[in-house]
Image 1 (cartoon, rainbow, N blue to C red):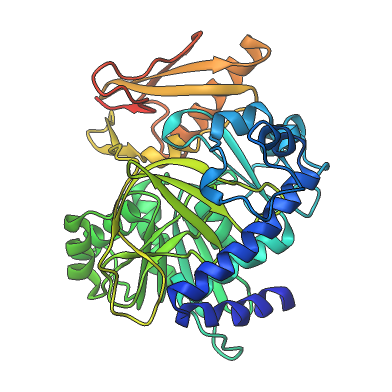
Image 2: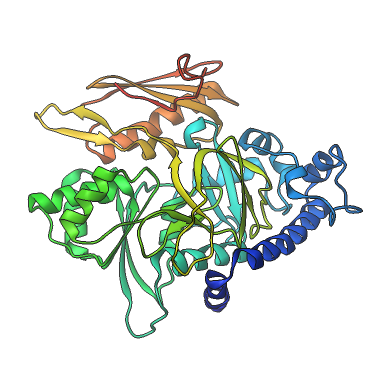
Length: 438
């Protein structure tokens, strides 16, 4: 708690710094991180040596001269990649499989986040205690904008994917108890359960998937719930103009969009003007290659990401913003755009699987996967495995059936799991499609 309070207070001045000062701060933090990885990461030491970057010259190297990495490179070299020898890929996979409860820490110390993202390649990201404290302080200062008040807690509700170490719920559930009363709402629960839970809790701050906030806005407009949040924070999937309009209509509150991922759960947020997103470049370095975002996290010394390809298309706004923040501004982020998968129920009703629940799908030994909706009653799962094929296939069948049970769809949707050698990119777009809707 003391570490967190320290960072909440220490982070605040950066919001008023000009671009030149932040650039100097960036460079200082980058040099320190570069020295750290050249000392503690076997992968980075060997990878950079090929590019002529060593401890002898690291102070003179421009960050733009450093070769990029991606999720595939990171995961293929995981044990040598990380800077903490307590972290081993097979042990982390086992931990995720055996400890699905959000909030459980690896070795009672490390926060573990996993995702496939839109690439279908499973990624594991680990944060040490100090890394996590900086991350959480950024979220409190710049996203929730919560002031420390020991006499009045904020009722915070999060709506998103549960049942695993997913980025959004991992950060939200770590909301400090001296500031927040917290409740988690599973986006994959039956709709009537979602309605009852949020209506009973009456959150003052509502956070989670943009589509989750939109779903609640629709229920508010129908008269099924009656809540009055003062702040609405959206991430995980795109906040479209239509969603934004309905959220404002339902709650009379302009939602705050923020940019988060498993790689860094607090990268950017809208300021109080609720327009464009400000990149938090005091603790990140952002670069662009033909609009594709390349990110460096300056706070994670456990699993450092330096010049990491995010596969998100980002448009930088050269005009900036006339608010108090000196952080650079981006107008749009083109990330995932999968739609809800709706299925017909035998009782005549309908219910959905949220795409981000499938994005965060995890089974030990699973290398890559793709969901294909065949009909209003059928869903196929193609998997690429690494290990005992039958064991992994049964585990995948069990995992997807548990998701269906949580929505009470187990009798309405037929699942077919098939092991394949590879899953190719879409022929038309050239990109990988994690979810192929009906």
